[in-house]
Image 1 (tube, protein in one colour):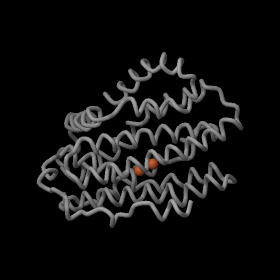
Image 2 (cartoon, helix red, strand yellow):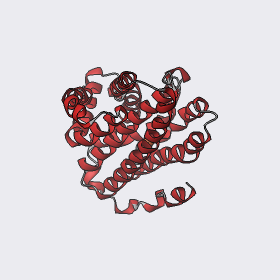
Image 3 (tube, protein in one colour):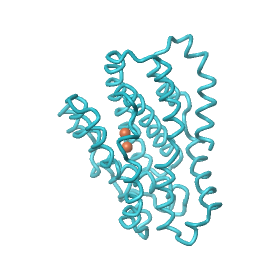
Length: 273
Ligand SMILES: [Fe+2]
Ligand SMILES: [Fe+2]
């Protein structure tokens, strides 16, 4: 794995001087998408410890979580922050992030982990599917080359995280002899949660710092979320997302085709909210 770490991209690989600022500077929805993502990624270290404790004794998993996964998620946060600061320098990132962190810390509790290790790996697969989908959509939604490059790099990392979690999932599933209905239950639950507390919390704190006079305006917050969702929904690739979501079910191809439609409906419902 050492080779993988040295090959991983660095923030210096991004050329922020190439940003076409005039293309993005006035795009308020894009600002919220990038800024709220920078908060969530930067808060990754809050739950790494919970995960490491949960998988204690499994050195392959804990080593990867601490030395690769956490580092990469934090780097996503730093790179997105740098992008925000280049394009919207007036945004007080640090102050807004502090406020976010105070609230976000209360969500990252051990009891939020799934009941077994295999199910937690299932949940991690869903979360990485969600982030991969989000960044792929972000990359497609803009013509600004530096953001496109950054979002594409992050999406690739998220797919790679998914692959690791999926491999660990298979190992634990075999050990725990889990049945598909429990896996399905976790996938369904976590898919519904993808767009919940974390994102809402981030958007609220970005808004608080960006436009404090609107922070208490529930209709505005709702409208803002709707715009953000629309950008993701318009640019997501349902087929790729579905494939990732369903993979832990390890269904025969025939069954997969049959249940694809209801799952797709469900997924669209999640992103439509
Ligand atoms: Fe990430
Ligand atoms: Fe990730």
